Length: 457
Ligand code: FAD
Image (cartoon, rainbow, N blue to C red; front, side, top):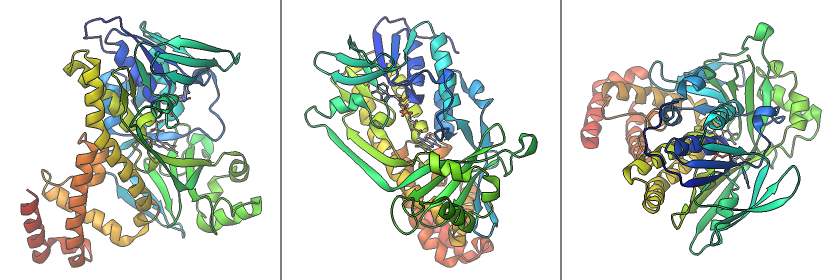
């Protein structure tokens, strides 16, 4: 890890939640000289098998990498990450269509959530300023007395702790946020999709070989629902079925093994032979919900702050929840440098700068669900994406596709969304003139593109 370049400070800091964001945040704070204590509700994941059906892998992209680079752990993570250069769309008749994510060599990376959490916890444990406390569930936060009521989940004993400064990185159902919700003028909303998700698996082939292209994120877009698959290092793929809870085609409608088998064979025929454990997995793995959480303010009197999913849980369709939480750590760290330990200002600035970005990312994530489950199967949509790449190649300084701005840049999310909206309006004007890729080079289209670019400048 990079050497600490900050003046030592002995202010003790308390973090609730030792997940991805909490463990990374601890490393950032500890290298500034703070004593950091992490309290995590679950047992230490380094000594546990991943819970059945919860072994999610995540797409890590540039914002996440930058945060990992900030504490010098990018190489450790890169060794266990698989680059995905493209989407591979599987049609119902087994046809494959590819769509590159970005320019040549640009990739998102499939990493195991558990593996990444373990790596960060190993680093945290090795840091002399960090102490880890597992099986410690925060039940209540008394914001006035600065006290936490904790339950040891092994003994069921409760005890009270006093904090000096508190960081809530306890995820979408944050207990720290729960306490803040009871303060005056705290805004809060949660919104569930009508869809749930279930984790399934495509097994490794003989000798641990991947049975699908391991350099792609695989999508089976089916209009109102979809399945996706990301590769693991051992040759398997984690699949996630995003599916309505209720209705004619829904979890509720698939009640028996025969119904599940028949449905999968009908709609995902090329995947079924690769999923020998489909039926037991479908029956045993939980169906989980998809929530967007928005709230404000994120801080309380310069003493408490919410970071990561605790302040902005989003649906997973842009692959940005963790990346956004990691970017929170980068931004907070920059502010700590900028405002030299003035926590009041740091927290106030942090929420002021990040809230519009978190809101934009939440909107983009919901939008991308429709794109992934539906629009990627539409040849007109894929043509539009190809034309956008051509514009981007012709005007590299003026046009970066929205997906690239979100995934391969550090442009604030809110700015990316605004740029993307303008670009979409331009595409709506161009596409009626375009029926094949070659049409892009016709004088009429080139003239219109030039005119649009002049206005965009
Ligand atoms: P969490 O990971 O939820 O961690 C919170 C931690 O706090 C947990 O360890 C929890 O046990 C602990 N905790 C909770 N309550 C308490 C308490 N009361 N006391 C003590 N400890 C507590 N993001 C991406 O960037 N890319 C992806 O491809 C991606 N795919 C996803 C796919 C799915 C299906 C889902 C559901 C999410 C996906 N995400 C993805 C989002 C990503 O998982 C989250 O944004 C990320 O995990 C947030 O990290 P966090 O540390 O803020 O919260």
